[in-house]
Image 1: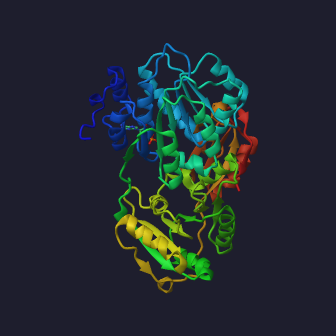
Image 2: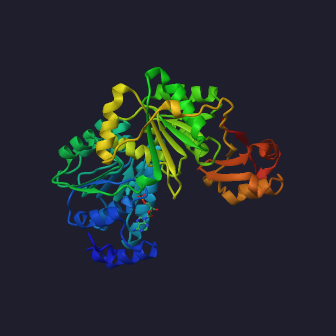
Image 3: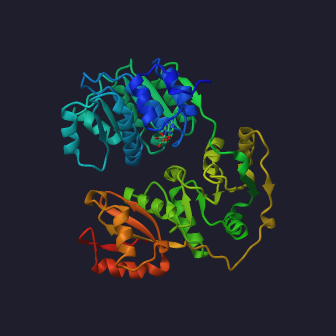
Length: 460
Ligand code: AMP
């Protein structure tokens, strides 16, 4: 597709103008490849990640078919998590400015049911939400999808990973066969292929080149005996001394054990896996992003929210069977022009996985010897910051400036001692240099934020 101007698409002039006002000058590759087909009503399988502009791609596509005068649900977007549903809802609302009177309702779990029923009562043209809650509304008949035109499955691979397969088929069964189905997925494993065959008609496949230049990532593979894995993992830290790292493991139990093993060896780490509840998960991701956690030990599913940050080193404690997952994992290092390190351990038994990666990347994997790594028994890796959590967030009208103001004003901290500030609905997180944590907590115990006493504590 050579023409990447939005004006080349058969969409309304109002939408073209809206896109310009949003600062979208031209289509991103996923948009340029999928929109011409989508607007003709074709089913789509798009392999695209967050950051590719995929939301606008399906957003523009689904809006094109909405009849504002009919108040039934015409488009349904299924997302794996509440955070993603929120983001998708926001993006579609921006795009929907070009069509008057479009109503979009978010239906996510973890939120009260009643108000959702209330917002559905007067009709919602577009529904965005998580599978479990959407299914609940369908069961109660508070949501009806018999008139649906467009079904979008966003991050379909992740929804399957999270065990939503049955819920998704139950939802899909209730939609008309004539619907258009748009499926977005970062990876394209067999389960997704199977699902596409059963729910799509002659789909067009769109693959966007990986955003990451493979060449800036140094990839090395270490053959180890099973019992040498842990020591080689330590040696990788000792030798390369990354400031931040993610270690990938297969199972939840392994993540916990590995994080403990690293902590026992002076490498402060946190495990992130599917057993954490939303709040715990948010806290781990916040701490990693604001430098109060340097090493994460993660399963593939749990690491998805990590796309935001360049990571010094990615370590595959075990190699995945699917080479696509390998490429996806290592793509998190070496961003923004920095050189990335991707280190992988494998046993003789797992040589086939190395071969699969070679085939996939069409280049040989460089094998290095664990004996070449320097050990440094004095090595320590501790994060430079500590996170404190303060009760009060967006819904209490707390803004980053209020917290910064309170801490640099009466509390007497220097601006440079305060790191990233994250505001959630009912709580806020602030990264602080270790040396001023006590001072900040003491102030907050007595002082006020937004005229109210603020309860605060260290996040551990
Ligand atoms: P997504 O991959 O959907 O998460 O989108 C990533 C970001 O790109 C979002 O902040 C969008 O608002 C933005 N975006 C989407 N399409 C375009 C475009 N054609 N030009 C510039 N920015 C875009």
